[in-house]
Length: 363
Image (tube, rainbow, N blue to C red; front, side, top):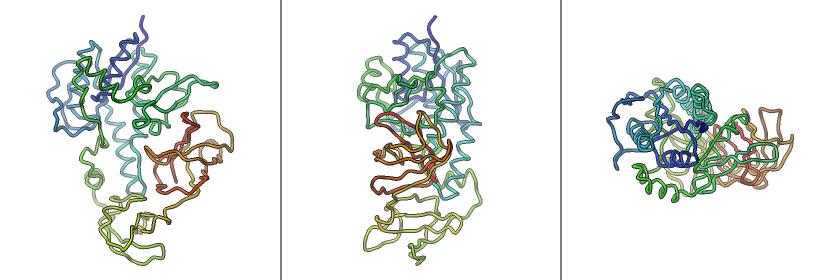
């Protein structure tokens, strides 16, 4: 009997090609679409899906049109397909997203979604139907290492998503498959196109799925309502430089869209949610030689002090550093050279070459 694997299907080309590759590898593949609890109608295990994708559809990863595409790919490949309501889990992610922004931090909901849903609830569903593995369309790989399975970067460095996967439980690595992780994106589109899959030319998702219009401030107003975040722009000395409409509209390192003019570029250096002040400064004032992180998750055996490369945001080129652990939960990073854009709330992911060692949340 073929080994059963549950594949998280987003309705995009990567998960569609993953379904095809898994079938060709001999797996018994079950497609799963994770419903976010939005009011859009989504048919589940039977019946038509009324909304289809179109060139003007704004790509997310959990809309009714995405569910329709996932269902049609499953039908074409003769795979069982389920659309399961994960609204409780998505609600938790929305709460986290709002809490972080209102605390003046920069959240990363994709990391949380992978940790809580795609490799949390997804694995629970897989076990419930007798599957021994789960799979997604992420550009990353799991390989055998000296101490067991290791999470490593995807071959296509321009699409590598290992950063947003650092929160996976290490014990789950033997049960995870990333079918597209060893391939380049053009290869994936070609495979999907040759198989006649309707998602072959579908644009990549660029937005947070529950904020498809990228209006974070609007989402916060709808999700939380009555709060006041407008305040002052100030410099490091406390001199008032102007006013801002709400600190949730800004992030550390931001230069454009400040709404105030200076004779030279100014950047967001710090956000103080308590006073609602945003500190602006020159590029040199953004430089940091250290950071502290907590809520660590380790995917490899590391010492109390070790050398690594640190990535402080998605697609940030990892830079050399020394890491000092404070127990299992926290660590301090000392960079070989100063870096800019260290944003509280973002993840700091540690690498040894291609291998993900672990990571934590910047404090």
